[in-house]
Amino acid sequence: MARRLKQTLRTGAMLAFVAAAMLAASISATAARERRASLGNPFPQLEQPLYIAVGEPTRPPIGWVDFCVEYQPECATKPSAPRDVVLSPKAWADMVNVNAWANQAIKPITDMEHWGVIERWNYPDDGYGDCEDYVLLKRRMLMQAGWPREALLITVVRDKKGDGHAVLTVKTDRGEFVLDNQEPQVLSWQRTGYRFVKRQSQSDPNAWVLLGEPPAVPAIVSAR
Image (cartoon, rainbow, N blue to C red):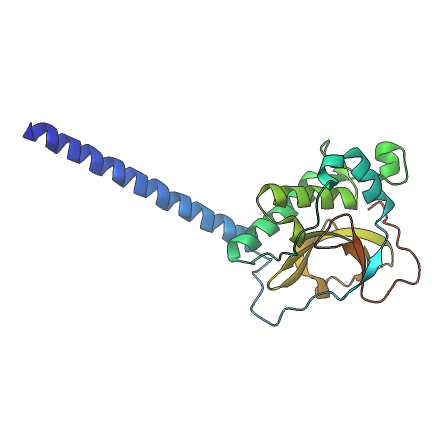
């Protein structure tokens, strides 16, 4: 009886040691992934967060309207309270990883080349897409990872050449950050050099609002 008890205790101790080693390895691997993700795109330092000025309601892009016809369940949402992401080092690493993965995995193509139409918003599940398709993919990936929809805002901008372009704005407690297929790094909105035109409301993805000064002419999203 005593021998059997000793064997049971030794087995239990060994299992506990293995479990502890596996947990330590998992924690180490997670930390390593976070360090790799932040390499060249460091975690933002604490500073007074700045947010984009939100203006009056405006019409959503026709691409979003058509997307909601095709993906009706995804747009059949009720208004909700705005939510910001708490930007921890892990959340930052996840955001950087999603941006990098999508930018590398998807091949750029115009909607005319892809679908034979001027404008179509769709998930790039076949590996091809233009700017708004990158945005939809990144938004979906982060939502599937548990991020709040209210902080993941599809945004129309004017890029550095003055062309219409779509990016994903992530609203956090450290400010607003942009995931962009034209830029490998996740940048704060002030550092993009873009003029922000309009985006989804935090409370309702089907309601869109102007950003900053009202645009002089309507922004049409380019196929890049």
